[in-house]
Image (cartoon, rainbow over all chains, first blue to last red; front, side):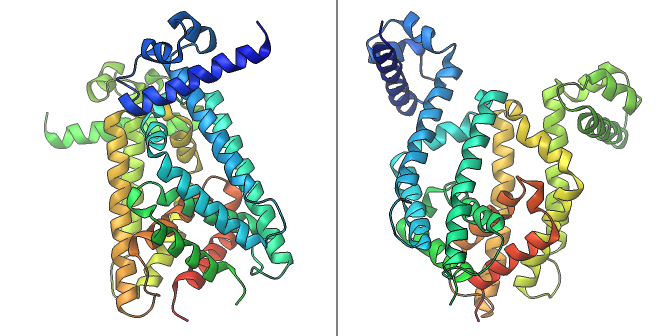
Length: 190
Length: 190
């Protein structure tokens, strides 16, 4: 079996798991439902994932990789740093609006967090903070942003982004624009 | 046995558990160590807590209650709303500096989160947000703060507070003051 086919089968299982988990909820979902939708045997699922928990970790891992890819897409090109940060915040809110079920999965199934998975989550978080710090430093250097600790500024932006996602009522466009305006008032040079 | 004695014994166990967990780390800690330090039998610990996980949930629950009590102390009296918010943020950072081990316990042991405990955490979070929203509304009414959604503003403050605690380097006084200044620039009327 070629590596290409291996990848495709794993992907098919993960996509099916995503659909089953978000439709039925994680606890009601069965590995056999996932196998059926992915058109593989139940045994095949267990070749790739050791348990239902492991399958959920796989789904969340893919989700986070997609999220990081989408957000970094927005920081390419010659746009001013603050524009890039705004785009990232807006895209973040959009992705969450489109995938409310997956954030439910993440925030309601702490039981699945192993030490290894925790490390993965922390490394993704750290990569995101480093990306923000770079952008903020660019903004300070260009005079667009006030001089301040890039670490503190990055954490304020990330913290605000994470915090609004806890309630869907705060993910509407007006709320997101208000958050951006407040951050801009706090961080940009007048 | 009177209710008073019951409470005291439970408290003694929780305090001992806090010491053992933070000194030895949760995984290395044994229920028998906790019993020994609390000067009760191991069986007595199991009268109050069904498992080591349950004991850790108890420790965290007490910690959060202490935290909420400390923070609400700061919002009494006739001080202007923004002063109260600043005091709360500073006290938050202080408590975390003093208790770095307990936040380690919370953030590294997701496995202990049951549905019931998750509900407790969410209710505490919600109570905190409501308190912040009230303060912000007072500040808007008095003209101290810019008119904005109290929900968004509360979540930005909370998000920033939570976000800086992930790295101890951001909990120093200078970083906390910088965060407060940035929030003030963003939220206060000039």
